Image (cartoon, rainbow over all chains, first blue to last red; front, side, top):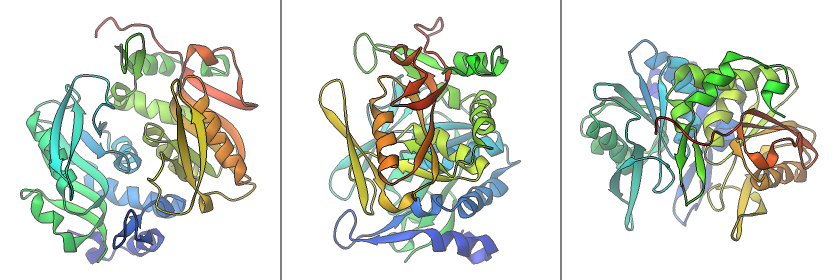
Length: 182
Length: 191
């Protein structure tokens, strides 16, 4: 589901602040740069508010954010809805006991980790990242949470690249995005 | 300077924040007592109090830029920026930022690393704070200060949740004020 289709008046302002950088990190990729959104306090606040309005009062106790841009959007949402924030990180960054989930990249594999004990069975969780492309990272994030017995209520991203069909990789889990980029 | 010496002496929030931080011995290597803030992020009240203390301090200081050091500075900086109406500027490891960047090298225990910032993110004359979870030697914060000053910003203060022994007693870093909430703990009873 996209807020864009709901035509919330804040969406246009948010989309206009996202900068597209051609050929980054390599030729052919149109990189969706959210750092310019963060430079506009009103647009950044609107972004967070749209998620908070959707998730407040829904008994969500966990916001899991994917390193590193998920760390920018996740904590403000967690603080506003009364949830804990759980960072999902690249290997060897988290100091305590972790569980790991591998996922496939275009070339090769990568891995996402979460602290054991951060999330308890039965907790209702969101996964937050700036963007969903192929859905591989989000899928790994959901797996981590489900492996410890949490219920992933929804995945939330600022941007979706629908042509990459990431939504289909989420095993039927709902996805909420603010803007689409084709 | 520690918050307890600067108006927050006896503030019960500081003890709760300190208690919420987990100490992990010998990470990433033998001898290091790692101060793990992820447990603070699990404690909604303590996490909110952490942000609120920084917000209360900076909201009336005309700060228009909150620069956060990757990656744990990203966990605190944006909430502060949103509350005080400032922009958030991520300072990142090399090759992560897609636009035109300036880079500043800094020393590690063995070797050097590099911090980058988008050149157009900050304008001359803007008042900025730098935020990170912890200050140890101050090398990373010094690099952050240099990046902001190179584009003509004024670094008003560096803010960290935890300040290590090396900076204890130092009220300033490279001539910039340093504001720290808590000291590190040596060991946890529970872990």
